[in-house]
Amino acid sequence: MQKKSNIQLVVFDLDGTLMKSDLTIYNSMVETLREIGISTEIPKEEFDKFIGYHFQDIFDYFKINVGDLDSYISKYKETYFKNLSLTELYPGVLETLRNLKLKQIKTAILTTKAQDQLEKIITYFELNNYFDYLYGRRLNSKIKPSPEPLLEIMDILKVDNNSTIMVGDTELDIMCGNSAKTFTVFVEYGYGKLNGNFTHYKFSNITQLLEII
Image 1 (cartoon, rainbow, N blue to C red):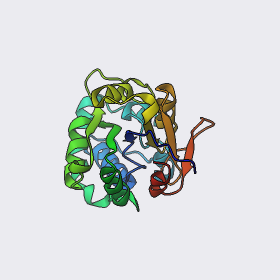
Image 2 (image 1 turned 180 degrees about the horizontal axis):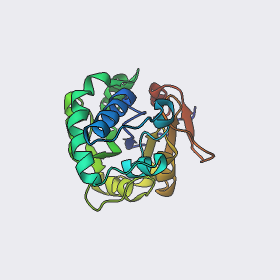
Image 3 (image 1 turned 90 degrees about the vertical axis):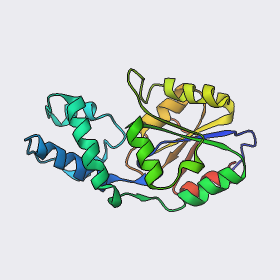
Image 4 (image 1 turned 60 degrees about the vertical axis):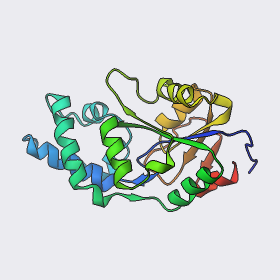
């Protein structure tokens, strides 16, 4: 693979890219639904395809009405951390992050998870020192596939699009990177599909990122 010698920033998605978190997410969702009195069967295999999407989109698809979504998410986050031990880093993630740090490449996370939830997860896995910026869902902020949060990250870290790579496992990540005119990497081991979207690279292991930087 041809190296991109000018890369200064790598922006990662979280779930399905850095972390195998499907059991934590699914179990927490089902437990929270039961807590608010909703007992419904959602096939895990089908649900996994929506990891990385906002809960509103997920519930719309499965035709579930949780009422006050903000209240649901607040309860969900409490349950999520009780199930966090079911989450694990994908093979090669630590090696990749350590090497990027040694190369003095800036790194960030861009996820649809809430900002406070993201920060707690990164602290739990002791990854704070590996990231220059964490961008979770915020009040009134756009989410992927909008390029706005990615453009904001680049602006904050003072890196242009020609020196940035967006890495993710869903079409939302790739569409976001394409719209922001960055390089894109689709990781094939995650939860999503490309669905015909163009990407510069497809990797079966995150360590392959080191071959192009």
